[in-house]
Length: 238
Length: 63
Image (cartoon, each protein chain N blue to C red):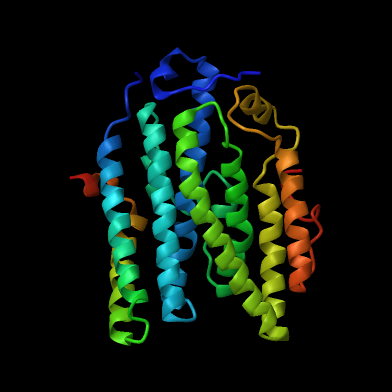
């Protein structure tokens, strides 16, 4: 297990596998950061229920663009150009969850509540990681992701409390996004995931992170009066 | 030191400006919640900026 801490100046001396894995994970992270706004800006900026919500959609997009910028800078400094993901069509996103378009407010709300929470989990994987320039950008990004999660939670709860029709819409959106959220953690027996851990780039196995997420989200959904979907139904990656 | 990818600094600086402009527009709207016209102008400004970013034409931005 690799336990050293690496600065940019040390990067050239690193094993080719380390360089490849770091470049790969930064590319995926950059794609996920910009993938969010590409899902919701087009339809939700004009259609959010109030003008204030419209501005919060814009602010959320601004923060995700800034997260992209920070990740792109870390990647660019080691010679990995991730700018191509800025113009990548949604159907070519690295992670399935970002392929498509959000067209309803309930989907937008649950996306923040459940998918930005996975985003937080993915970022937490880099806490205390071996590449210090990546570690340094995390605190501000995670703080903003927590804001997105809270906003998504509050908007989902508003829907649930608005009556039977609102609750049904929220449940339908949860059923859709929960499965995608669990799939975002990747395959349980992934060999690549083990190599990330070997090099100190991630902390947990895919399955461990997914189980932690399930344990966190289940009680929140129940407390909101929603049903926790079957975690094995409709999954692509077990 | 590794060789940085082309335009790393330029893209970083450009996006920093974009984010600053977006936050400025949002702040303008949020601080005038009772004024529909200012809110609408702020939303329009955000839309204009975000439309360009969503197109993702990096070459054009950095020209």
